[in-house]
Image (cartoon, rainbow, N blue to C red; front, side, top):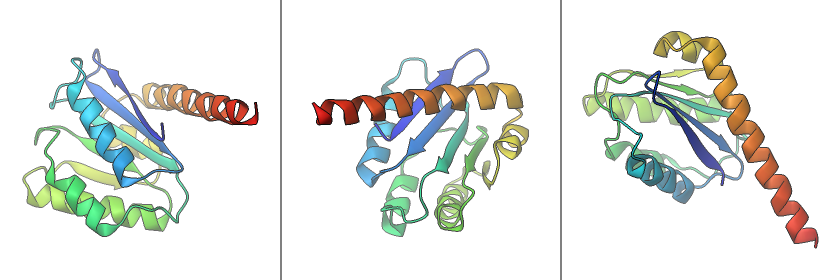
Length: 151
């Protein structure tokens, strides 16, 4: 699964992690799973980590427009997208602009986890620990799939 999340109910934050290959369909499923999760609240803050995506993503500007139409978080929720490469930064910035037009002004695109933590006011160690767990799970799942294909 190229897009996964962890919900920290105690601190009121959702951590989303994406890895290649990531498609528009993966992002839609991610949104659907998040909304369906009983622990989720639209008032939670959100940090999304796109650091492990390659610059040549299959996500298009039309996909971003469509994803931005769905209101998942409240207008008071603080959201940070970590996108260190220029292509992903631009797509994330487009999403943030569209959400701002729709009345959700607290979406920022940043280059580091530290900046994401500062914007969302989540302790940086909590942010790093969450993404270490999500990254480890994603990589172990990828490895298991490779082993199954080899059998």
